[in-house]
Image (cartoon, rainbow over all chains, first blue to last red):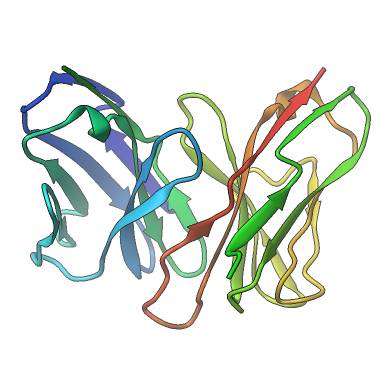
Amino acid sequence: EDKVVQSPLSLVVHEGDTVTLNCSYEVTNFRSLLWYKQEKKAPTFLFMLTSSGIEKKSGRLSSILDKKELFSILNITATQTGDSAIYLCCLQGAQKLVFGQGTRLTINP
Amino acid sequence: NAGVTQTPKFQVLKTGQSMTLQCAQDMNHEYMSWYRQDPGMGLRLIHYSVGAGITDQGEVPNGYNVSRSTTEDFPLRLLSAAPSQTSVYFCASSYEGTIYNEQFFGPGTRLTVL
């Protein structure tokens, strides 16, 4: 059964810190891994990763996938209070999408 | 483009009542899905559809029915609501069969079952 495990489940840091969020997975037929940010409402798309070792970057956020060790990380540098959210990792297998539990990130000023 | 729309935004039901959560998308997406989100549980897949006339169960299908008679609409039916179905429900859609499989989410329906 396809499975996604995120860690940590909760993280509190100070503004300006760098954070690394982890996502490990098990899948029978990998198609892609996606990261989402969820604030008060629906998740919003951050990255889609399909190939190992290729970093995707958007401003202070970056993500990379390791298909051999079956994990992905999401890095946020110079964090701001607006980065406070739940970050969701999502795996696309043969047909279904499977989400992890999410990491609740809180940035204190 | 309206994207993915869901109605209602909020709903309160009594145990045993039935209702349908509506979901529609105007992007001609083949793939549509329903998730529920409970505190600390992330998003869990209830049912999904890869095209009109085709549906399948996700991780937590019990107590829910779906149908997909058109590409645009994917309603979720609760046959006999239970307090355990109190949750926030999200509908999502995406292209299927291409690499463009970013999920587009609706705004969510907050359901309370008393």
